[in-house]
Every structure is written in structure tokens, then in C-alpha cells.
Length: 372
View 1 (cartoon, rainbow, N blue to C red):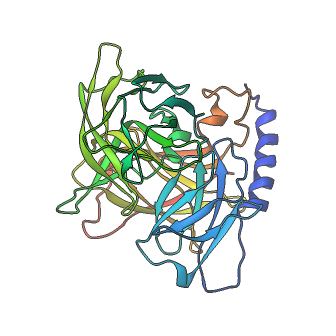
View 2: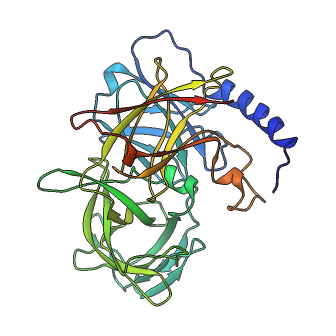
């Protein structure tokens, strides 16, 4: 789908109208700590998304996709899980004075298998799973019935997949709890349930071989393989993946109903940047994203606070792209390569290697005046 110079302004006007009605939030209740919206990857509103903290549901998104969390229900550092049937679960760590735009990817369809037999499954996303026989447990006991399995892939070269990934691209060392920024080579969510939607587990002595789709970009011969810790919101290193002669990454997952991430550290520690975002012709309520150019990763989409400021975790000495006002035309019939599906209307590239970083806090990188 191509857009002429005459068509794009019309799309922008439609976009501004939609976002002004859906994203701008005015609330006089000072007890509201967090306001946000939930969207699908094609920018349609998702209602009925449950927001959980430590396994307890504390809110839902309404029919407009909006959610609000009261001050008493969340605190700095709380891990929030956004869940909806048919979508991959998203994890975010709560920060004060932020507004979240949560994008969720539709989960790949389930394949039904007999747990007593070894299975080789290839999903529409391109993921292949080699499942040994008698691999599953239900309530800590061997399970021998039918298994429903889904494997959803997040392409590291597709921006919408980066910003809707199950978590931000930061790992945490288990012993030291040191945070490590990551650049990804692909993310997978593996789900396994009974036909009654009961969650299964893998036997302790069993793993499932996973083969991630081949990539266009050059990939290291060996990369780290991380599982998502939904209690901390960070990725934990589990094993390694090796590349084969078809440029596919091959390894083993040891848990199901969880997300796995093929990554390598981009630095020893992440850095925090902040900037002021000013819209020249009035604020349309857009969210702002920071994505890597010299690496593959994203810190999600946030709405600037009342001071027009927004913060991101990024890889140090990297090149990043700021984006705002994402196009809404991605949907059925629109190929993933279309600009609508993979970018924002307004962009700004920043080389962080030219900026002196604050060693003890968030580095102010100035003001971005958006020519909207």
C-alpha cells in the first residue's frame, strides 16, 4: 500500500482525531497513579484486558481500551501483567508519572497433539518445536491426554513486534541482580494447555527443542537464550542457541506457558535518557517510542507526563530512533513490510555516542520539537 503526498496528510488528520479521542486522558482524581490504553498490533482497541499484580487482578481495560490504576493498588517497581485470551501476555514494570500504551500481539493458533507421542510441529510464525513423548505434567502429575500448543514469534526486524514483545529487553543476573541491556534476535511465547484450558508444565528432566525462523540479518553463531521472569519483569539467562546452515537458531526451552528470548547483551549496563517532547501545532496525545537503530530492541511506548517529558532505557553509545504518532492503517490485507505497520509519522534519529551520559541518573538529551 503506497501513499501519495496528498493522501498522507489526510491519514494524519484521521490519526490525530482517533488518538485525541482515545489517548488523551483528563482525570481530576489525584489518586490515579497510572493511566493507559491497550491496542492490538493493527492499532484496534482491545477491551477486557486484565491487569494483574502478583497474580491478582487489579483492573481491566474498558470498552475504549482505557485502564486506570489507583494509587493504593500500585507502587514503584511493581510488575504488571496484561492478559487477554488470544493475545500474548505483556509484562511492564511500573514507574511513577507514566502513561502506558500497551500493544499486544495476537497469539498463533493452537495445534492439538497426543502427549503420548513424540511430535514435530511447525507453526505459521515459522517456529518449529520437537516435542518428546510423555513430556507434560498437570498439577505436578504425569499427563497423558491431548495437548493444545501454540508458538508465537516476534520478529526482531519488525518494529511493531519489538514494541509489543512480552517484556522490555533487559536481563537481570540472578545472583547480583545486575541489569543488562539486550539486543534481540527473536522472541517466542510457548503455550501448552489441556483442551479445558488448564495450564501444563514440562517434566523436570524434559526439554522441547525449538528452531526459530531464519533471519535476513547476519546472526552470531551462538547467542544467549533467556526466559522471562514474570515476577521481576526481566529476562533470566538459561542456555545458549546455536545457528545452523539455514540461518536458524536452534536450542531448548525448559518451560511452557512462558516467553523465551534469543539475545546478546549490547552493553554491561543500560542507561536512562529523558527528553521533552513539544508538538509544534498542539499535542495530539501521541505515545512516544525509542527503538534501536544500531541494535534491535525497544523500551515500549509511553505518553509524556504533564511536563511533556518522557524517559527510556536504552543501550549506551548506540544510535536510537525516536518515533511518535504511529500510523493506524496496519491490518488485514496490508503486508508487514508496509510503512504503516513498521513506523511512526514523525521520527528523529539520535547518536548517543555524541552525548555525555549522567553516571548517576537519567541523562537529559534536550527537547524534540515535532513538526506536526
